[in-house]
Amino acid sequence: GENVEQHPSTLSVQEGDSAVIKCTYSDSASNYFPWYKQELGKRPQLIIDIRSNVGEKKDQRIAVTLNKTAKHFSLHITETQPEDSAVYFCAANRGETSGSRLTFGEGTQLTVNP
Amino acid sequence: DAGITQSPRHKVTETGTPVTLRCHQTENHRYMYWYRQDPGHGLRLIHYSYGVKDTDKGEVSDGYSVSRSKTEDFLLTLESATSSQTSVYFCAISDSTNTEAFFGQGTRLTVV
Image (tube, rainbow over all chains, first blue to last red):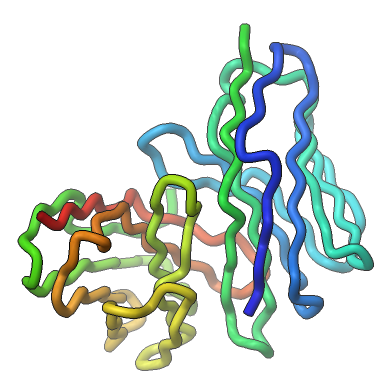
């Protein structure tokens, strides 16, 4: 089955700096790669996603890049703010023809220091 | 927020007892998932469903069973609860395999 590895497990940055979280996946059939943010005591919520037919997607301060050949994708947060502090999860999905399994990485605890 | 509700929100149970968690959705989404979340392990898939009566195992399915008799309800049963099943359980729904999965509020289960 799919295996998703996420690094680093913890990340501390100063407010205004950029943060980068990286994930690799094992199944070349995966074609959907979402990123979720989970604040303490709350449910995970989608912040951005990318499909395998594009290499990059941006939404304001957040961007995701995908390298299908190397089977890795990354989350980039620019101009970080204290409210960006949370746990971030990457995930990969193989798609309908292979059965739907959304497999998550182990998460990155991001701390933005004021 | 998407219409997804988990019940109960908190439960304490004794080792060896059966426990059923319920996930109810009002979105008519095809896919439903049960995950458990433990420190250091992220979100691990227990079981998922791709339609009424259509279910399959995830990566940590031992000791768990599921049922989906209606589109809107997905039940997770711990047949004989063990302390290792103490966790936070999240249900999620999605309408296809490459769109957003919406999560419920979570159920904190403690097995003593």
